[in-house]
Length: 82
Image 1 (cartoon, rainbow, N blue to C red):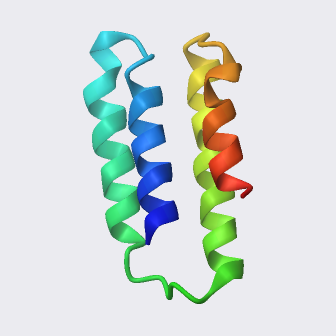
Image 2: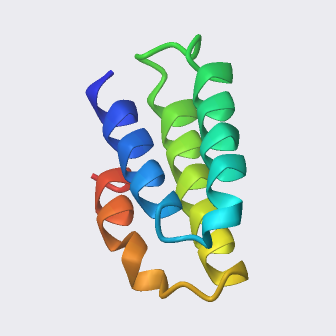
């Protein structure tokens, strides 16, 4: 459970780098996605790794959309691929 919480926290940190008028939307979106997948079996590493990769890829897409330097997601990448 620790890794998903670290990823969620890092996604919220990235949301703070977005334009002010978009932050609430993406924070809510992130929360809804993490809540939707809370029932995933903690021992199903394949599914968890797919979800972690999806969180990272979507974060990169959003950062690119708002022209935020993608290197801001380096810590998220490290967490997701650890």
